[in-house]
Image (cartoon, rainbow, N blue to C red; front, side, top):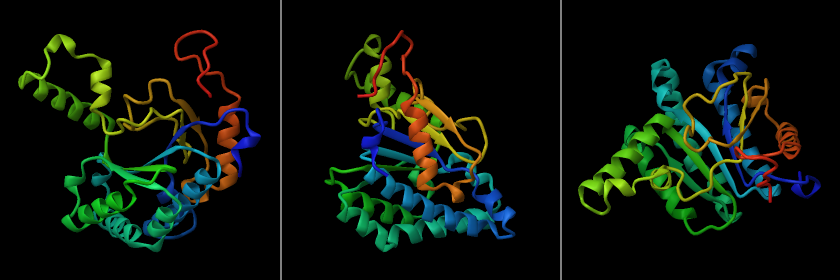
Length: 245
């Protein structure tokens, strides 16, 4: 799939990968089978974004609320996460000039998992192609709260006065900084909400919802989302303002 066939392509895509459990249930499989299939789809979509000249891809892999799921499922997710970080695909992505970055409260994860995350980030740090951001134990409210605490601490240390605090300063302390805000958010699985994902950054993001479960999400489904985006006129609160350049 090549983006040159479209009049405009999002620079940054965010995806809420929803529907793994329901896909597994529909196929008479255990939840872990849905998550394994979902991981394979994520790999395929990363490659599709490389082919489509997308600059940034942020994947909502594990939310702060996901810890409330059954213990067996959470343990399976952690094991899968660790396995993915060790797979040869990471080296292949590195060879394709992909940079991988993690956002979220990684202190919640095991020391082994944290070390593997840091290793992947270090390996791909200087790559200049597609940047893949994996949001793990992430919540939008947590993100804003952490940014507020960081700004408050600097104010207490007299690095600036309170009157200097503005939205730009807050934005610079959010997890995604200095990456641009997503242009397009895709949510699979049929739900029509953003579920505490990138609350600040989604101020002017175009939202695309599909009933397709994440394990069934294909390159063709991605192309449908990109074509839908290309037909939209982004105004950013004004009139006839376009940012699709």
